[in-house]
Image (tube, rainbow, N blue to C red; front, side, top):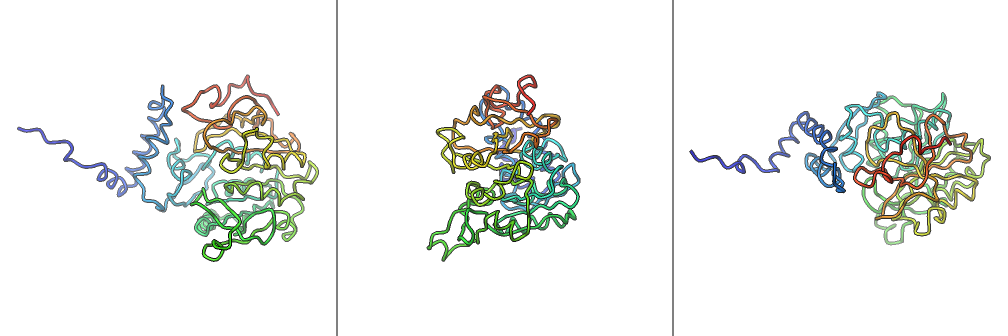
Length: 368
């Protein structure tokens, strides 16, 4: 008897189509991929998630497919499969993780939020950070969310509603250095970058009205912001320029700032200290750190948030970004949560030199 040709049993397309049609089996396969990632990663400098397991998971989903997942805090998120954030959330190592995206940034935000009442988030996406922060604020606290994408606003408002959160407001305004500018988005989904619209774009594309943080706070009669978080794909510097009044307040009232910095949008070839973003913060009396984090969903329970001195942070390599944390007083930094270190990368990565790209042993960390 001639052996059957195993290739006749099915193509990869038929395998992925089968998994698409059976979400429970699809999730079981994803869980298995996540489980074997450390074995695949061992001894190689290839980023296994980005080169192997991630693309396999991408093939199991339709672009924009509507999904739902809950986290440990009891929050449920509905979102579209349209970004690495969505993919890595589904690839969490725990069925109910304690965060959606960037574990250490989330931990830093929640540590700051527990002593805060007023938070402003620029680039709120589908609420990955905002919902958690709103729940953590002191009684009577409020979270002001800014998002430009109508699709993302729809998901954000839906997630606010299904979780019964009543202390978030959503604003479709572009945070910028001046009011009433015409701002357009270049790019897609979580990577859409705000830019001042040229006349041709303004006449044919979607444009948004700009607002400074200071003007918004005056309009809303907000005297102090406790936290400003910005993840607006290159618009962070302009948004901070529009927050001079808030940033100029004394240490006891000035907001803690968490924002992304990315070499695609700023020139850090002469060091982080020389960038216009960091210079803006330093000029207002802030101490600025690079916040070490995985850009994904990683189990980091029990690990402190590591903050790198900006003058020693290892930032060489291909274009990349990470978050900064800035405070006017280290008293804002809970000693049970934060640690300070030097001469390492803000990027936590599994496939690079562990002495630079992995969390540090406790003896190399200092209390703030």
